[in-house]
Length: 244
Ligand code: SF4
Image (cartoon, rainbow, N blue to C red):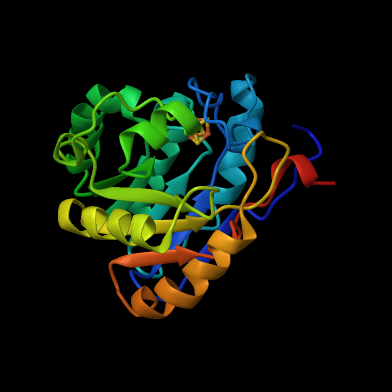
């Protein structure tokens, strides 16, 4: 994706304040989720990725001593020089907590990754896209690739869960149930409202309106719930296939 030029660094001042960088890796190895085009922000060229990532990581100031790293995939998709630079930046800017994202299929890589940063005095928070805790909807419709229907099993590896709302078939009840399960098992929940892209699953405006009316006011002040009404709400990113 050479024509995708999103903002890749931002500072989040509300709820769990932190800096956030959107880096680029070799790309998600799952790539099957039927709603997702994020994985297009990737490149097999490690050196080009590192140069792009370096430019963003140099912007990190340590303002809140917390850093979130996203890379449209999992931390395992980042090249080693980028990971080493993240470690260096954490030490230089006194980052004590770093967030990374990871797909379920890479869960066994998490323990060593936590140890690696713990040795530097950095606590890791690992976020995963669950999208919904309804396993039938998630796997037969979204094709998410999580082969357990037990939220506790997911939470044994991950600290934070992302949910995807605004999909046809969701209701106020199903979305609230997802938030409640997320809050019962995870430290934090991140609600993403679906935005249209060129993938087969399209957002349902009625579901988004119902969320906005019934659930947004109820959870907007909850410090354990991030709500992204647009996928650029954290100040980074964009809709890949519509990028010019
Ligand atoms: S949502 Fe995540 S796991 Fe699914 S294809 Fe996209 S980047 Fe990969």
